Length: 356
Image (cartoon, rainbow, N blue to C red):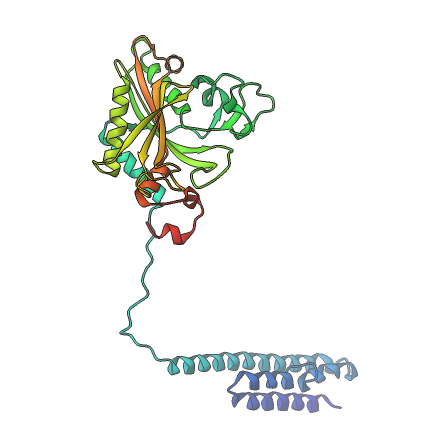
């Protein structure tokens, strides 16, 4: 077999392959052509198998020519395949009917979480009363979370069933905890204020919003993670009457002028005297339901700041007095929007969130 004969054979293979490819218009035809002209048993591939029978002088010439034919066929196949796909797409688009008069798809707008909405309203109401927002940390020392608030070491509230401990290893009586209430912020705020003028500390009127954590059983009214807004007012001559007036006015601003409220005697180590602040349940009209449990819904605790807490904050209880309260924004939202389960707030269920 002479070199010119194989070269002529390769040219014939190239030309016949290109001619056959030119008339193809479907993916199935292209795949069949590829199997016939570029598979291992295709004519051009068989030429490579003959290289071993050629002379050393013929091998590079024939090998180069065979490779050029193979590349030409592959290039032509790629171009034809792209053209067939483009043609099929054009036909598909041409067959579709597009009504340009149809309205576009509506844009779904995000919205604020109901908890955020009620928090912002509380900020506004307290701002009108002259309170400023003060932020404090969520990870606290036992000293600030308990001891400075008149919880002695060994108090039941320090038990593992009530508190999330982060580091209780080598810290002794002062482990790190996830704060169980926003009340530690009271001491931080008073210490910062009294540090500016230790002899005559300035009055304080603040709210302290933030997340709290308690290890307890969850139900329709209780969660292990929840928001609180702590309130603190310290200054000369502040009385329990000021506290009642502040919270009663808050309820009227939130729920209307005819809302019924009540204060129940209670106990908190950091206030004396102490009380629970309730609002009549709107869901049942005071008759009792799964949310309120008896016609009233507790939305916070309150009381006069204990003298020991005032001292820990740098205020002399002989000269200063103050009141403090802790509100549950989610409880308030439940009353405002008629929500019957506090667990809905953190479930991220769009069916619930899209109602607000």
